[in-house]
Image (cartoon, rainbow, N blue to C red; front, side, top):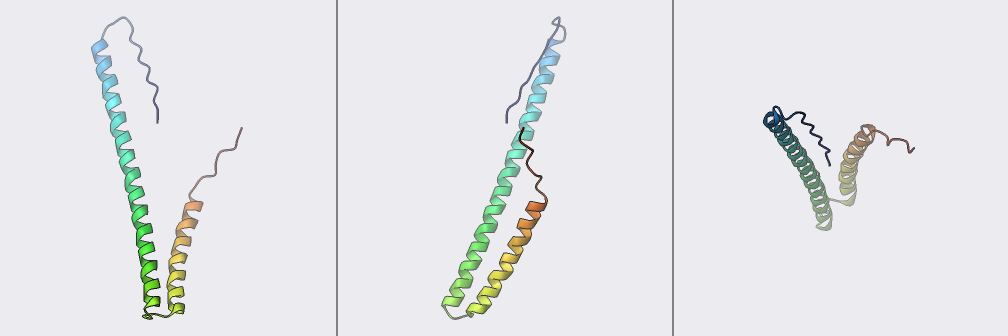
Length: 104
């Protein structure tokens, strides 16, 4: 992200006040940027944890099949249920993502 900041000071009066105001605005921008970056990292961490959880669960199901704890049709039903949830998430993302702007 980039910012263009233009500060015009005329006749020298109140220069310190104007500079203090500009500095305060820059600080506010930096705080907001830090918050946005932190939120982005939180979302990434949550998605990564969810993927890890699903992958771990699928490995567990395959392990149960390999040990004859559950049969393959049961494992397939479990996988289908997980896939259905993933399909819901995918549909929600598609429904809430705006189309790209037309190219000029």
